[in-house]
Image 1 (cartoon, rainbow over the protein chains, first blue to last red):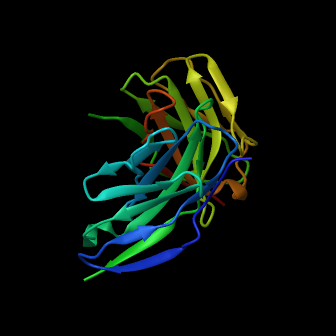
Image 2: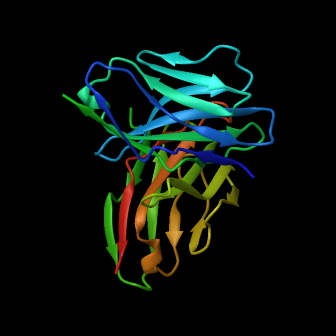
Image 3: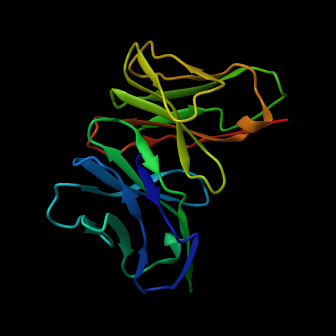
Length: 114
Length: 112
């Protein structure tokens, strides 16, 4: 069975510092995709970054990077130079290549402190 | 750029009532899906569709029906609302299996 685990229910970070949000996954598939979404207090789901299982380089999108360690089955999100607007819930998700189904983690609530 | 549009944003139902949550996308995406979000449980897949006329069950399909008569629309029907269906519902669409999903703004449903 596929599963996403986010072990940090809540995190605090000081403004302008970097923060890592943990995500581990479990799958027997060889081909899959890993996604991170941000959910601010307004409720919408915002796509941040994607990593394919066969991608050799870690994905980056602006201040977001994905620390992909395939052997450890981890896909941690790194946010550099945190901003107050980064305060939100963050979800890690996985999609196996043979399916359209997303599996979501339970989320990490990040609070950026001024 | 409308993207994925969900209506209504808020709804209160009485137990036993039925209703339809509307979802429309204007990106010509083949894949559409419905999720529910409950505290501490992330998002769980209710139903999904890989194209007009094709639907399938997700993780928590009981109590919900869907149909997909057009590429654009994917309504979710609650047949007989129960308090356990109190949740936030999200509709999402994506171009294919390898790209990100675009989500609607969500519908906060309360069943009393």
